[in-house]
Image (cartoon, rainbow, N blue to C red; front, side, top):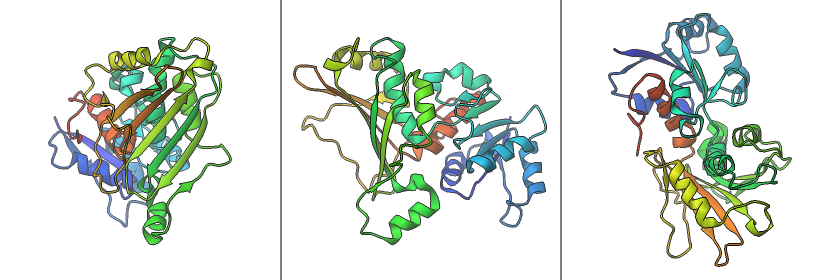
Length: 308
């Protein structure tokens, strides 16, 4: 049976990439509004209530407004904004961590942030297993392609080829921090240091661990084994091969995909480790994750339409 999908905010980067992944799939039919109607409140309300599934690719306030416009108990929602990622009544849309059944049964799913996906994929399973402490002041360094900042940042980077690095959220108020803390069960908010590089897409998220100073922290081999076991069988979250030369690259020419690769690096005496996640900020970090969640909610194979 064909199910209807309305992407509210379909003209943005995330919405366009979701539509690309759904193109040609007979399981779904997209409800589309033309340019003249997509900002008309009545037209949006009609589309929001007619759809079996709504995917919100909107700023936070607009996402909350859209949810309030749904006046039936049938339409199911995936929100790609930050608005509902720690909100009561919403299932966090990271099925490998939150549980596939929870996502499958949910009426309201909040899609994870791109940076958050890397941090949570690395830290949450290890904290749950008691291999890392809940009360450590974790630090997270990350770099992302500029497409994650939407049209304004894309235009800025593509209009000024002299930009080599853009550090931001220097006031330590990045919007992903609450979900990073909540979904990993941490008593302290992580210190998050994000930056943007002159590549359209791609992302590396790193959590350095001074293991010798961390009470109760496990050895690097145990951390690696635990992550391998936790994600065993997942077609989306995979353990990467450690590069022989100790080097990892993001290339500006990368086309991106919907997987996330995890790595555990350590020094010779196992006193320090670096947890690293490599992903596409528009893939598992945004649009790919939305489609994965949509598949699960619709009772379809979770990888249908994904780029793996």
